Length: 158
Image (cartoon, rainbow, N blue to C red; front, side):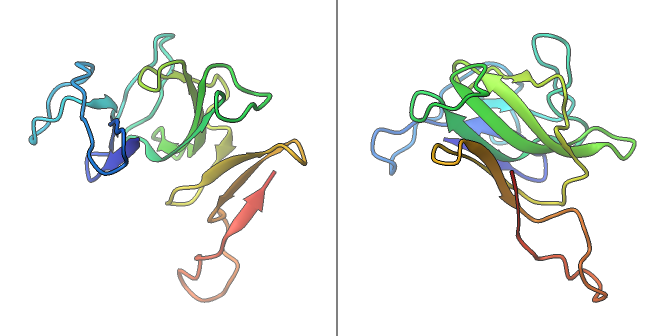
């Protein structure tokens, strides 16, 4: 399982055999936080092994993962493909893609953010083997009403 904490916006990794009891492995990748957690693998301003930014000043948000061992998909560059929202400062933000063989060490897509200016919440990435298309479900980065903050609409992109 991959999970997010706020307000620090770190991404954590946990494993379970039954979905009830969870192990928090000591990954040793990032410094302990105030709770002593050593199972964090992604935090604000983190770079990948190639020196590319995984996330900017606000950390990752809405980590959604596809596992190529569970469902083949054509753009897989590693076992796991993750989509998440990240801001990179100076008004640059959006949905980003990263790849990992182990689900812990991630490499950023060179085109991040792949969908710029995404709204302030998670989105879901799915691969449809019937239509052979990727779809993203989430809140769109547009205002579709004259009512202030009436942006709770759901969109679908392919």
